[in-house]
Image (cartoon, rainbow, N blue to C red; front, side, top):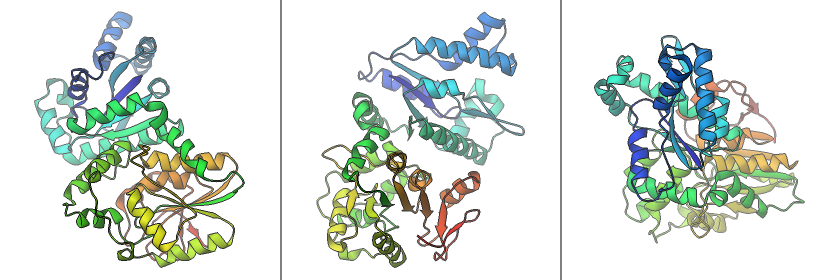
Length: 399
């Protein structure tokens, strides 16, 4: 397999790859160093340092590097999506990069730590003027645009940290079971629960959409566990497979499930759901939350016709891409798909549906607002009845 590790300068890509290579789990892999190889090819082809080449020459050098990598079977490669410049960002990422790699990992590190490392790095002195906010903006742009690019071509995009105790077993498991556990394959498996004869499907996110609460919070409290580690996992509103893998590790041994009557339904959403059912839609819950909790909630309230959730026995992880591909596969099969959710984890599900509606239960989510502001061509709408409104998107007046 060909794995790409992206991230801003000094985020720890080299350290991470070296740790993977010395772990004993990836003995067949090698690490062609991107910057070193580009420098070598530039000198061989043009007799100049890579940074002194014209943009066209740099493109040629990158193409040569890509062709070299195509001949290799198992590689870890570090890469850059873009670089900050005086008037914005210069994109280094190419279509060739997108087509080459099987999995894209994005190493997201604390911006203050990155700033300190840049100050000590001789080769990165050109970035010492960047503030912590500048680095956050750099990371945000890279994550957002890489995530969009990968989703469109069914390439896995996973935001990671350098928590090696969790990261190494996660990457090993994913690589060893990739054909079965990549997001698109899981989505193809999951949609099999929906009868082929069903032509109208309504997909609903669960936590904070169907119910007012995040059911996981009460689940953790019920098992006397602090919520701070949970907040840390999803810091920055990242909802890829790795975040939900770590989340599952936290609650794997929990035995106490809160009673369903402790959760409160969002009445406006339930009214919309009822109207959709009357119009012949199959109602499907799609949750990245805790499967055992949601099975109990659904059993109590009788909300869904079908429920798609994480499953520890089958190893299913319902992440942001999984949700999106479920909607995409159904739409591609000619189904009319209505979808509703409240967070960035639901965005691709909403965008891939025939009609996707964002719901703001108690407040505007800044990450969703940022997405909508940067995707002015979005087809996502919002309920007219929702008193809390996002800017720059239309309203859904009827179902």
